[in-house]
Amino acid sequence: MTTTPNTSTESAPASPGRPLPARPMLIAGGAGHTGSRVAARLIAAGQPVRIASRSTTERLDWTDPSTWPAALDGTSAAFIAYSPDLAFPGVPEILFGFAERARQAGLRQLVLLSGRGEPGARDSVEAVRAAGVPTTALYSAWFAQNLSESFLVEQVLAGEIALPAPDVAEPFVDLDDLAEVAALSLTSDGHADRDYQLTGPAALTFAEAGRMIGDAIGSRIRYRPVSRAQFAAAGTAAGLPAADANGLAELFAAVLDGRNSLPSTDLEQLLGRPATAFGVFVERAAAGGAWTVGSGADA
Ligand SMILES: NC(=O)c1ccc[n+]([C@@H]2O[C@H](COP(=O)([O-])OP(=O)(O)OC[C@H]3O[C@@H](n4cnc5c(N)ncnc54)[C@H](OP(=O)(O)O)[C@@H]3O)[C@@H](O)[C@H]2O)c1
Image 1 (cartoon, helix red, strand yellow):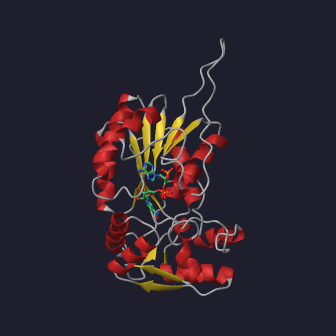
Image 2 (tube, rainbow, N blue to C red):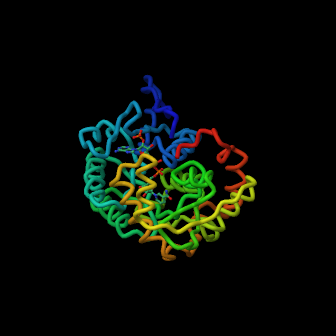
Image 3 (cartoon, rainbow, N blue to C red):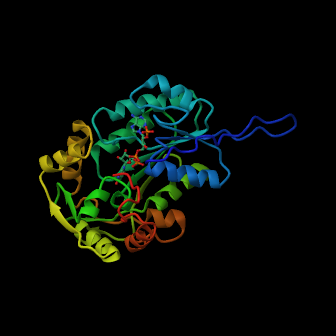
């Protein structure tokens, strides 16, 4: 994200005779693609939030446990978007420590953003649950917004999506749907300790996704399978630390094998409406200038 989020949405202290204000909910990793959307939904519903990451006023750094108490203390529950990826080695240990501290701070619920079909991501969910705070796991498909505001936007603009995988079908989930489920999980009963599989309504291949975006913006976007080394090299050239680029290459090569192609109906059941179709995402993103050169999307 290129903008600094407003992190000042906590309520003022109650005055005498007035009810105590609601404790804020923590949005950990809240400056990013998912957290900012979850925060916006909670704020719109009148729920105070505390957004925390390395760049916010209430600083939270996953690699620095000394920052965790100030982020957690005084909050009632938390949404967690771990960055760079909760499936990476060593993350279950970090998230267990964070969830332990959350239990000590008295949080009643955690909602953890996770990935579908990734053994490392499941380990992270289990580590968080082991700390004892009821935890909702959002096992999510690939975000449609990876193509419009995240690490694939430059590839789309260059006319070629290149991943270390065959052209498998993926039921891309829209981040606004995901954020709605996260906010619902935090603000209504019955979601603690539940597992949700969050996908779009149908699977399409990366070549099909590229064609649909290309049709909308009047260009040709093809799909090219590349080796892990090629994908990792492109990632480091784009500014990723080598360890993260290699980790993502390994992760994508492993999980983009068709294991996650089947869509789930969890999102529709939770929201009482169909999940957003990829075509609708494309229309909205194109109308919002996502693929207009100079629109400011962070690659
Ligand atoms: N992309 C997908 O298709 C997909 C699908 C399923 C699951 N997921 C999972 O989603 C998670 C990422 O979510 P996202 O895309 O919403 O996140 P994101 O936008 O990539 O990042 C969220 C925020 O994390 C903060 N951050 C980075 N390093 C940090 C650190 N060391 N300590 C504290 N904060 C840090 C950054 O803000 P600051 O710079 O301010 O710190 C960033 O804005 C990953 O765990 C991934 O496995 C992704």
